[in-house]
Image 1 (cartoon, rainbow, N blue to C red):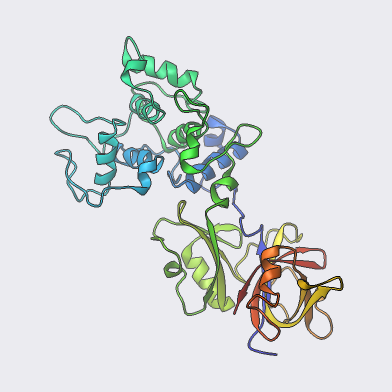
Image 2 (image 1 turned 180 degrees about the vertical axis):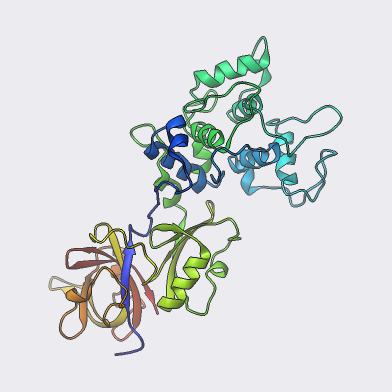
Length: 390
């Protein structure tokens, strides 16, 4: 047997998105707004799109932070000015939201006050949020008559942008209000268009008219990347991980937890999405033990390729591989050792053309190589999802 070999459990798949309610979320907040499932869907969508993260739920949003959210919800997120400049007297160039305030003001989404101030630390009011969102959709002052704030709010309500939001014009909005406002924005059609605003952020609607969180990630997911024990997960992705969304074995987590699990396992397998700054890390340890049923799990197999099998009618396309593996980690609560034969071998199917090519005579994996396979499991049957040479 070549090298060290181990395998363990993956939970909820390589694109798993956790919709569990935060333990810090009170039932009162849910009752005030919507069902738990709807709240979690909205929370994950605005997080995965990179618009905002929900932390305190009822905490008020400052004008500076709202300007940042507006930019994150627009195409300008990828074309920020190279340097910050002072646009308002009370927003110095080194203010953390200076560049966002500059863009929000220049695009007419937000306005300053008399005297040349922006008041970045003051709460953003509902009427200002309404104006900003309608402007993102393409509406201008010419689209409204009479008292502007009331006219805009009427249009806002007509477009159902106020779904799950209950605020008065001069009321400060909360994080939960922002979450709902931006989620509603994503599924609202742009002015004079049949296209939803969310297409700006690669969103699409499900058949029930809600934003599909998986579609946000499908086209942008990169990986897998094998990160060995002594290498940094944070340095293995092409973006700053300070505010990254991190999942470990399908469960919302932290980089610190990923590092600890990586050290214990000896390696980690990563997928990432640059646009949403999301990292999915998988290891052979550190998973949630609440689900022992084995449903919807992925298994990480590390071992040596012993055989590559072909159909008798097609000697060019491999259909499965035989891997020599060690016993599962002692703390693996989902035992796969019963599926390994008496010689320590495990047969794994190859269904995708990409993996079939990788193990064919034209690919770069052959008998004797050490590999890490990401596999789906159904009973005692395994199918490779991804393969990385170790």
